[in-house]
Length: 411
Image (cartoon, rainbow, N blue to C red):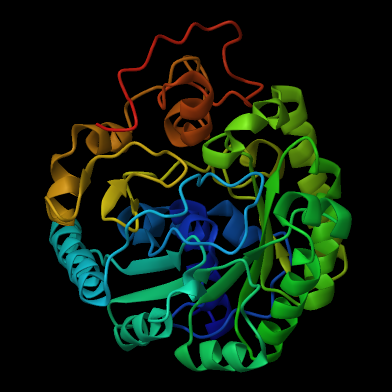
């Protein structure tokens, strides 16, 4: 029988590999806090994923990325948001969203019986701490830990020592902030002073015992600085550091020239792999995580498949529902149709869940069905078709023609 530490790490590994660790968000499982074996390379028995893959296939979670406000105190150059004044729900309507998510969990649970279907809610904005009722909402989520866990995505600028201690009592599975390079590069992208503010927030959170993560958005401008950010995360004692590629939407629509070519994509993943290997050699507690689209091609492990519209659903401040925030294709609104109806009746969401569908340009690739075409939001941003091959994939059929997609920002 596996000991408690191995069981906890197994649970974390399964969630990471099949469910994208809450869309990039790490978790503290019901078995307790993260195992001390938190280096970048998982033990061989977990990398094999014989039993783990079976568990992931039958006991997948359901994840809601919930943008409760569009308001933000920053204007990051690479943000996929461009409207900072969107209408937002009042507190009563926020509670209705929670109820609708629970109803969807019930329905998914009946569909997958006897295998469990546990939920997770990632709460973000904009900047969620700008809402005066944000802590009240977290109290509600914390009280429902038997149904789902929750995490917070924030820029960290509003977290002081007292707030970190409050978060420690509410027990989110993770608080994630972003750092985009060294101080000069980060402040160029995210705004003057944000590097120091974010590092200070991380120190408060780690001191309060709150699991933390650093997210890094990779583009040509900062790609070579990932190793330094990974080292910073190790020095601060964060739970993990991860990265995904720039999506040229919203404010970032002017940064199309910053997206990677296939060769640059592979080079960046090699940079990540080197950082992960270095963390493992130093027996660090901080994991350098490589389980996003295409990263398995360099980092190994089970192929990542985009979870948008499958185990991931996004709700906007005004109730609009997207498969993913970085794939802004509106499938409905919670003021017009309940979440469970949108999830099961949307033709587009059903298409995203079709595991027999091969992305254009991926024909003949041995990873096509498991990988699902790579980063679908990037394919949509660059080609207009979420079912085209990832533009950064060096295995995709070169010169493949992508037809004009019938998908717009409203489906």
